[in-house]
Image: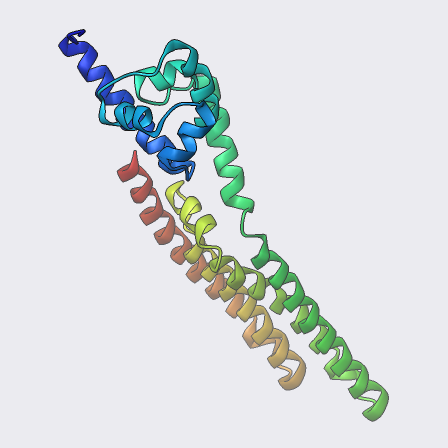
Length: 232
């Protein structure tokens, strides 16, 4: 009977644990794996307990079934990817996180379409029925600017994208809040200007809103940057 050295025992333990985890990830039982390899359940059980190793001829089919290379299987861990592959993987992950939850974009576009349609419909009804073309033309503009707010709000529901943006120094919440504030200023200015003729005194809402939005956005980016540095 062969006596295993300490190094070989450590390698067998790493192999057995890796094999067990891979089999579980694939949703296979020991019986399933044994049937696919043409061995007994007892053989697979011994491999996973670190009492024996597969024969050389079984390593390649075993690695293919489990989706790893023979080297990874024997080493008991995934091989480290080359820097170029790691960069590509990171870029793909970023792309996936930024585009994965497209349902929110679709819902946002649908909501905006409904709001714009209602604004135009209300304007046409008021115009054709009561000849109120002026000042109710502002309804179409208000509907259009409201779409900006709707898109920003729906972006907040994309948690994965928001989390990724926050970890890379961009606070989407405070930046979005600043944009919403500016759109509110635009709508208030138009509404009060058209219906109350307050064009002159209310122009002040733009510089005030811009300053407040800038401060809010700057504070938000400061905290987002701190989060990124902590992760690094």
